[in-house]
Image 1 (cartoon, helix red, strand yellow):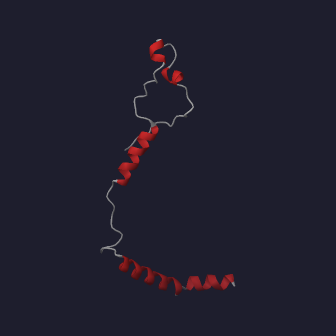
Image 2 (cartoon, helix red, strand yellow; image 1 turned 120 degrees about the vertical axis):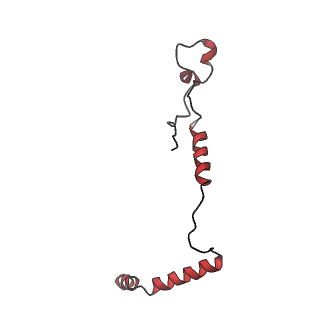
Image 3 (cartoon, one colour; image 1 turned 60 degrees about the vertical axis):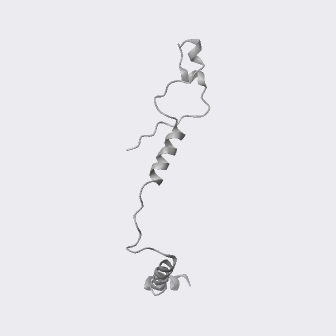
Length: 92
């Protein structure tokens, strides 16, 4: 589970983030959020998603030659499909 904080507007003032009723020295500092900024958390989530292991698409190693062979077989099946021929008849 990965929790993302609420996305804040960039136009907020640092004084409003620090809150009212604070000492003058602390009013110049950004307020304590308790978590990193939204873009930081999104980049961490993105890196974790991209680092996940990927499962194979086929039972064998898929080379360019194998991919072309599979694509040619699928295209032949599409060309011989009765649904495609019926659809082309409806268009004419």
